[in-house]
Structure formats: structure tokens, C-alpha cells
Length: 134
Image 1: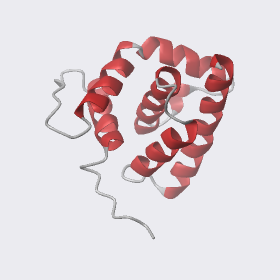
Image 2 (image 1 turned 30 degrees about the vertical axis):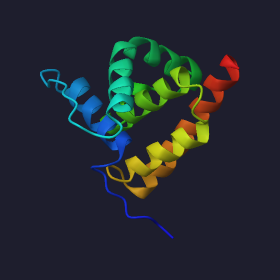
Image 3 (image 1 turned 60 degrees about the horizontal axis):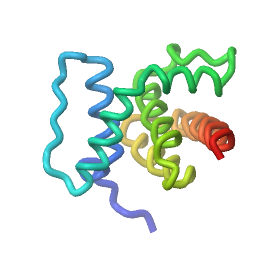
């Protein structure tokens, strides 16, 4: 049974929207309205912005020379950055949970074929990051 997906209540949809606004419309002021996961959302958004260069370095190192991050769609870039931040700085969250949550959220922004590619990318990055840090 599939539960009704309400993007307004999903913290990772909000994270993707905030980061997209900040990275690709720099005038966008960040505000965090009342939400039951406000602390989590704020932590991921601000942490991802603060460590953007480090996250990009890790992505480029882990995905190899043939992978060009800048050629990806901007929504893809945003999702990859946020998920990579969680892989690196939220060790108490399972890789599978992070991937599942971002895939569910990406359904709001991406087509099914793009979601499959995103799944492969997240799985690849997550395993490589966590295996080195373990």
C-alpha cells in the first residue's frame, strides 16, 4: 500500500527547495518556517551550504574522472549535494534510509527514468563514502 505523498510535509523536499533556491538564486534569503522537522531541515540546509566545496571535492573524488558533476541537471546537483552531506555528517542515519528518502522526494521533481539514475548515483556515492569512513 502506497501512502499519500504530501511534498509540503516531507523534510527532504523542503531541503531540496531551499538548497536549490540558495545555490541557483543567491539573493534568496533563507527562512525556516514552523515545521515539525525544522531543526533537521535547518541543519542539513546550512551544513550543505557551509561545506559545499568539501562536498564537491568528495563527489569528484568518489565518482571518478569520467563523471562531470557540472553536466548534471541542477536538481540532480542539489539532491546529490544534500545526500552527500548526510552520508558524510549523519553517520547515525542508514545509507538505505537516506537514499529512500531522497528518491521519494525526487519523484516530486524528476521523471521515473531520472530517478533510476539518481538511485544508482546515490547508492554508488553512499557506499564509497561510508566504506572509507568506517
